[in-house]
Image (tube, rainbow, N blue to C red; front, side, top):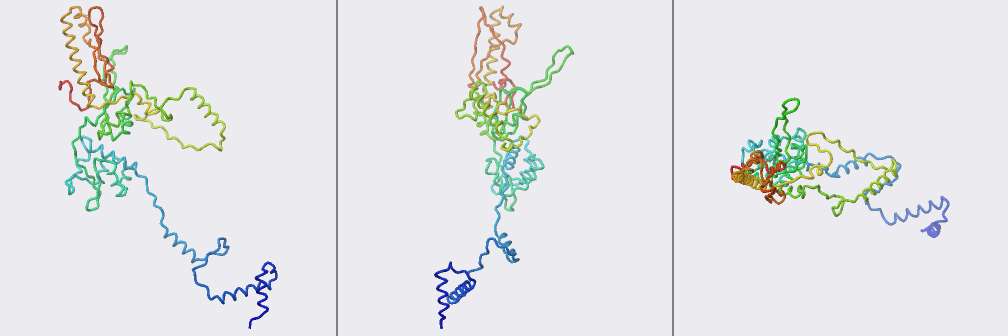
Length: 421
C-alpha cells in the first residue's frame, strides 16, 4: 500500500522547494530521491569520478604513483644544439687544407671507395686541420647526421658512412687554376696587415692565403750616421680563395668609383646621406628622450664585448677602414702589367732616338737618366694613353709616377711578364 502522507510530502517538496526550512522536510526529500534512484536501477560504472578542484583532503599514495607514470609517458621536446657555426668552421678548414700546396691531409687518403674516390677517416681529418682543443672536442662529439650535413654546404668534398658505419671524407682531386681564384687588392689603407685583409676577405669565401708584399729595407744618411730603414707593407696585396665564385662576389662589393668613400648608408631608404639639419634635430630629440626617461624605465642593454687587441683589430668600422679599396682579378692585373712593361720599353726606345737627334736634349737626358713618358692609366677600365707636353722646341718628359704601385714587378706565383714579352 502506498502511503498517502509520503505522496503529499513529496508533492509539496517538488512544487515548493524554496519553502523547505526544517531538517525533517530535508530528510524526507533525500529519502524520496533515494527511492527514485533505486527504482531506475543501479548506476553504470563510468570510471572514477572527478575530484573537486579545491579538495582539502589528504592525497592518496596511489594517485601520486599514477601521476608519475603519466608524466613519464609524456615525451619531452628535444632541444637540439646549435652547431651551424661549428660545421661552417670545419668546412672552411677542410677546404683550405685541401687547396694548400703542401696539404696536411694528403697522407690520409690511403683508401678508396667502390667508385674509386680517395677517402680518409673523418676523425683523422679533424685532427690535422688545425682546430683548437675546444673546437676539436666539439667536432668529435657531433652526431653522424650533423657531420654528414656538412656535405650540403660545400661542393669540394662530401662526408658519408662506409659499410662499417664509419664516417669518411671523400675528395677527388680536380685541377684548378690559381689565377682564376686570385684577386688583386689595391689602395690599401696605411698600416694594413694581412690579418686585417683576411678578416674582410673571409666574408666572401674561404681564404687560402693572403700575400702582402713588403718594401725592401733601405739605408739612409742621418746626423747619427748610416741608418737602415726597415720593411713596411705595400699598398697592394693578393688574396687566394678556394673557389672562383668568391672572386666574383668580391669584385662588385669592394669597388668604389674614383676611390671615394661609399656614400650609401644602410638606415636610409634611398641610400642618401642625411642632411646636417636633420642630424642635429635627431640628436636633440634623442638627448631629450634620454633625459626624460627615469632609471626604472631604462632598457637593459647587452654589455658590449671588449675590443680585441692584435694585428687583426680594426679601430672603428671595418667597412670604413677599407672604404677606398680597389679590387681587380689577377688575370686583368697581368694584362695591365704587360701593357705597362711594353709601354716602358717603348718609352726607353723613344728617349734614345731623341737623344741621338738633338744634342741639347742629349745633355738634358744624360742628367736625367730616369726621364720617361708620363703614363695616365685608368684603373677602372684599363685604358692606357700617352700625353706629350711641349716646352719651347723640344719635348719635356716627366718621370714615371711612383704612385703606380699597381703595376710594379711584384707578383704572387705568376710568370715573369718581361720574359713572356
